[in-house]
Amino acid sequence: MSANPEDSFCDAGLGRRFGALFYDLLVLLGIVFIAALPLPWFDQITGGAGFGLWIKRLYLLGVCFAYFGGFWVKGGQTLGMKAWQLRVIRNNGRALGWGDAVKRFTGLCLAVLTLGLGFFWMPTDTRHSNWDKLCGTRVIWCRKPAH
Image (tube, rainbow, N blue to C red):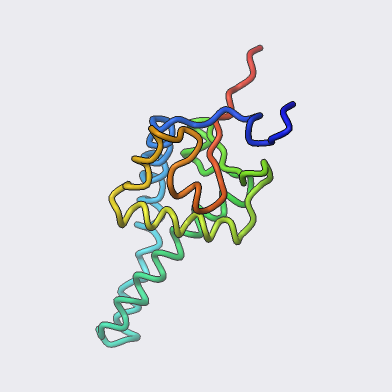
């Protein structure tokens, strides 16, 4: 085993990451659809004011964080990552905690807001997307063992 724990893992490529993200977005679409059912109730409480719109947005953002953050902390894999054999870990090789999940989710939100700009970093640094570097995490490929 190498002295640097980062060197003992096979890094996930951009194609696998996008495949897992697409899979997760399909799953998340279903979850958000169900989670959005009580949203008309927010309008009744706030009287349709602009404040209610922000409550809805924060609620749905919280649902998205619960999906991604929960899976990252409990095993390091979302459903899409599991299907594509990926796992997210900290740079030291340990599992993510809730603080790491918050940082990583914030990075994911930034990636969405910038239309994936952070992923264009990957061809020059195959170990990390720009957001991984900022979060101190990395996505590894967990190859299935040959029988």
